Length: 218
Image (cartoon, rainbow, N blue to C red; front, side, top):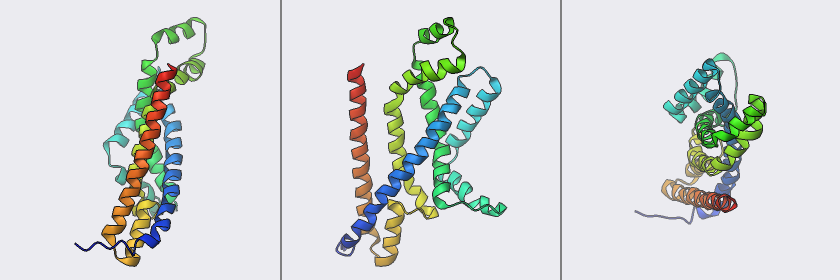
């Protein structure tokens, strides 16, 4: 095997620009997933069976089918009906909708971990269910599930390479573009793999620091 990084090194700045695209994409997708995940979690622990069924069905579908299939449907499907959607928006929607299924389970577990006495006290004070959930229960739950949400961010960062198949100029897509120019596939992919690894390790360290700080504050 003859490895030659000399042709790849001058293009490293081009590859590094993909970090910003990747992190921005993942952040927007997670925000969408968090908002929708909260709604789904509230439905799952709520009193209405229909909403609970719909939320559980949503989670089952998005957790039970491949993310790449969901992405393909959202990006390649709408043009068949005369609707155009950009690759970036399609990626955000696919990742956000998929993440919501997992986030909803994280939030539900966090809510269920909150002391039942909190709910009983709120009910005894006559606090409406919605106010109790959003002002009393969820704030406490989020404190407990923050590390898990950060892990979801890390997982999305790794999985985000999938959006390269629809042309989003993330890290992986930039490697593909570079490969088409210099024909040094292995070297370019090795460098991008190293960038992904370092990025995930940095995020993991940040996540651990946040978790330790939360533990100390307890």
